[in-house]
Length: 233
Image (tube, rainbow, N blue to C red; front, side, top):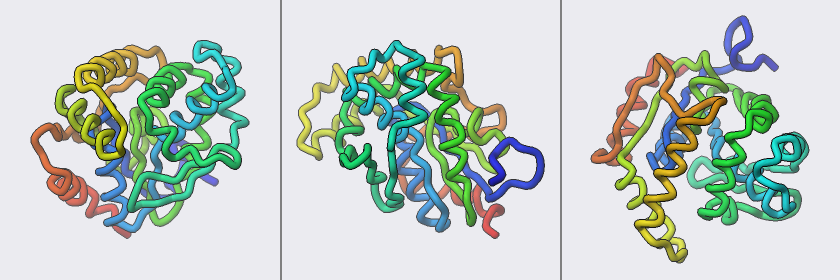
């Protein structure tokens, strides 16, 4: 299998959609993948899966060596569901709901800050590059995982709007959340993601930036699909 970044033609075209937590990149990416009939990679779900696995195993989230071994060996599997969030399994346990908790999100952010973990998960993410194409969402898809992607998008929104969206999402799932606390957690995670030593959250130099604060999902999807039109084979 030819992986992104190797010399020679790409195995399949790739669109990357990066951005901070709550920017809407997961929803936008799924909609774009569905419209194109392409595969979808939710890289955040992979890191959240490692975070949940670490919490359940009692592994110190600062123990880089243990986390890297966990990332390499954990039996984390995905059921590709473009119409909804991916169905995620840790061994025989369904962790689809567990990875969407705030605890899992905070754990994922700390796990993702470990260079050894990011290296361990690189090939696993690149293996999603399959015909007819891939839409990959995350924080370093366009800068590290798929640097030669044909189209790169950086999606952002204000921290206040992202906190509001997260609060609405949790409330709809029956999960109690406090808006000011969510805003504080998002701001802390933004800082951690932007300042980590490896693969910090920054737009790729050739990325198209979209501020989704006051845009609808349909509007953003339509914009990305216009940019993606030349990639349809």
